[in-house]
Length: 148
Image (cartoon, rainbow, N blue to C red):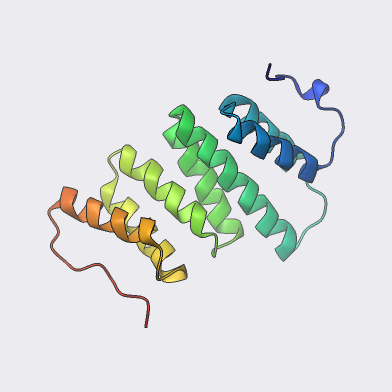
């Protein structure tokens, strides 16, 4: 049975909450996972590049739970925050692209998928989503080749 209140988790450090969030997500308990990721973010200690990358990862994870729950605006917001903290977070670009495409923001979705492709030129998900968005938009331009 998923736990639902912060007091039940105790004063665990952020990393422990993140791990429990990952486990809840894998078990299909998306609401619990989102809460655990939020608790993890609330318990962040430290600053700097390492802390920013960690927070960006947790935000991206929470965004995935929002996608699973159909909360597309929240997913987009978490991904935007993640990208601001770590502009190299490929998953944040992919997930924001997914949130935007489901919401009908196809042009913005293409930009996110292209950003992911710039960071990982062989990313098959980004390539297939760019092609799918361009088909929806009626754009016959080739997929950018950042693998040079």
